[in-house]
Length: 323
Ligand code: F6P
Image (cartoon, rainbow, N blue to C red; front, side, top):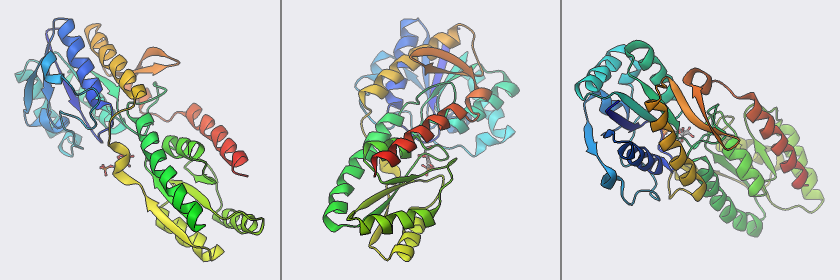
């Protein structure tokens, strides 16, 4: 193995730059040539390849976003697009590719390997923490803290105005952000996928709570289960209290990565280079119980039932502490 490429794909996540830095510097350390592929699979399709060396990743460890840019490539979903990507990989003599991204990016990488046999290893980079084979994905912790900062501020106005706020957070179908931010931010309730909930019961609780002197509520809603606007309308209709919906949106993807994500990204970047050198492909590197682990993409992109068990336990804690 002489030359490898690195790309970031899908939604950006804080810590992607730290992972790029680690990949580049570990590759250089191992005497490999390293190329950057711009705009994820789009750059692989359109031959947007740049030279990289240890200096090209100076001072990016603490920067949000990704210096390689990223995209959700529609063209890569078609075999014709993947064929172009294969031609670029051949033309640039890439012996392997490291893909920093999430679920969709790994599904694409799996198909790409099956069709064209370009060795590739993934690094889980997404705020959603929805990948099996790694306890945490790069960016998830920072996203929770960004959302928490917002919730803490919302709490000030919730308390002052004695209102109900419904706060929608990202995470697709995974409740990682919703549950953690709910617990850390002292939310009264969290609506999230894989959990039965009844808005009627919630409204009943709010009315009963008001009678007992409770005046303010923060309800966190995971984007995978409902829209803040809809939930707010229902609560308003049923309780007649003042309710405001807030969608935190893409601010959750921005900002400087926390130490946790920088450490994770630094470990996984090097692990991916080593995995490629050792002949691994069609797999992702992750950290499970603090140890490095290599998991086939097929498994990594499946649903992790253990995670949702923990989420349910944490939800129980939220409800206990909200009384
Ligand atoms: O996968 C990361 C993520 O931020 C999700 O939490 C969210 O559902 C989605 O991306 C938003 O995608 P886009 O940036 O394409 O609007």
